[in-house]
Length: 409
Image (cartoon, rainbow, N blue to C red; front, side):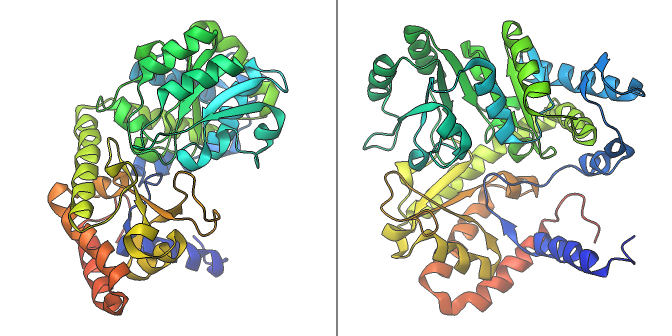
């Protein structure tokens, strides 16, 4: 297939080998289904489908309309939503479309501070949205949990139009009812970005903000859902028209129909009983991994986890910044990512933390009994770098025992 482009072939083959031989602990990454890969590589990538089912700007839409409608219906059933837009190309335009649907430039959104667990798309000053809208921020308290008293005070002071809960490095569960109550008190829309935990919500292992009366829920379709790279907006029926217009023609042109078909496949997979077991196992593995790290004297932000994610304070634990820790773990085949911690005094390129998680290793079939071994490899690599060669061999042998789904050997 790649005989005329050996450079690309070598890179793809190299990445396949890296994925087989390493253990992926990045909480936002996962291994998708073989059926998703097939849909992504289908002839649907040839088709422009600007508009929505029944209202397209190009002909030849019989099957694209069928697929997009199927994806929307499956998403609504899976998450108990009244309406769904499956066209956002990724998480960033997904959230941007919501802001632009309901906000005017300069108006206020209340979101989580980036260093305390919020995401770049939740109003970081370096983002375009952070310059377009007035984002005010809430933080965690001394115990590492969200300070809802301070959050409410900020909401009452600034009267935001959207109260946004969502995170990229917060290891504890959100109190959706508390967010909903604060949004009601100030007359704001309640929005949740559940990109990291959508798989656990779909599998019934974590609560669903739509059940708590949220107006809008956004999520990517990969991560713990194991789908294609893309975004999705779920909402109450009364908001669907504004969101659809904001996505197209407001922000995007033609959707990627191959990705929408792959998302439809994903939603069907996530509705099966075995996915519920998978979602619960992600959480079980995360708690076991956190306990194993704590037992070896590792300092964890918030002291543990309620979800799939663990944030390590590498300065307190290993006297090194997160970038150095990430590089040393890469050397033995443990894939992680550096991470800022609350009120981090270090710059983002060399932060004080390291973020790890369990979706990808759970997909490969690992269970809680495997977590102490992973914790030991992580700790030994950072405390005893002279053992890197031995540890690398052990990690590779373990990875071989848990094949990556869909990769041909």
